[in-house]
Amino acid sequence: MSTVFLNGEYMPKSEATISPDDRGFLLGDGLYEVTPFYEGVPFGFKGHLQRLLRGLCWLRIDYDTSELEAMHRELIVSNGLDSAERSMVYLQITRGAAPRTHYFPDGDVTPTVYAYAKEWSRPADDVWDQGFTAQTVPDRRWSRVDIKTVCLLPNALAFQDAKDAGADDAILVRDGVAIEGAHQNLWGVFGGTVITHPVTGHILPGITRAVVLEEARTAGMKVEERPIQIEELAFADELFFTGTTGEVRPISEVDGRPVGSGGVGEVTRTLSDLFLARVDQAKAAEQVRVS
Ligand code: PDD
Image (cartoon, rainbow, N blue to C red; front, side, top):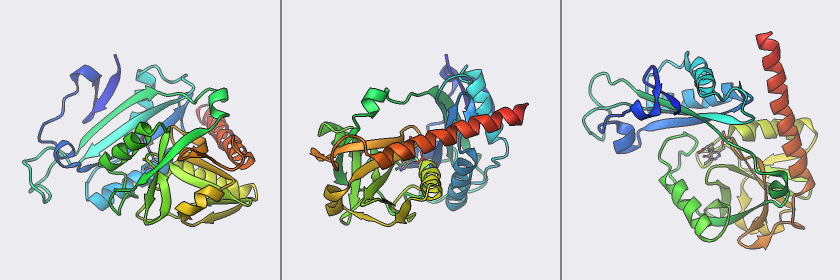
């Protein structure tokens, strides 16, 4: 039985109940974050927290986040995940329960804060080495997807469309631009230059994206943050996604056509190795922190 966190208390998941008046349920009026842990060590926590704080500010939800890191760590430990190779904490904060109005509720409403922990795994090496397939689908999301709201219906529909087409994932296309995946950022390698969409209201600024950008630049790769036109996908030497539970994920096929010369490209493999080395550094830093 998993232990979850709800409004300041730890409890068995079966005992966690949320009001039917919750604005997260009725209106999608809330935010979420997914933070990865490696052998019990949080990775990129500061980045996830900063993105959450920005979202809280934008939604004008007043919530004190000072205890969040301790709560994340406690959930990992109480669910026996401190030695799991990979785990994560899902956190959701909504405006809270109040009689349904489109405007913000009158008076003080306490935000609903819910979190759970679970294990996840990286695909086996032989699966990863083959790469993953993607299908282009229209991006039907709003123009502030940089705010990580729980309104994920367009993402879910896009993913389902890709799945129905037999692909592993979706590439969302808006105004002729290959924006990002349904739950991951998109990257291309063109003639040795690594390209990903700039941070605008049309992408989620991924924490994994930020780490990979830093690693690519430090390694001396030529990097550009600019939109990738859908026509360019056919000429990419390599394509890959990045995200919390996807890490660096090679794309070997788009809309049934192979990417580059097929298989996993050198740049993708190098960036994946550099990303995993950053995870190892975080684990080593934690050893120093606790000793
Ligand atoms: N997805 N783009 C979208 C649309 C996302 O939903 C996500 C994260 C990312 C990658 O962000 P990060 O590197 O910070 O995980 C990009 C989360 C994990 C999810 O929905 O489960």
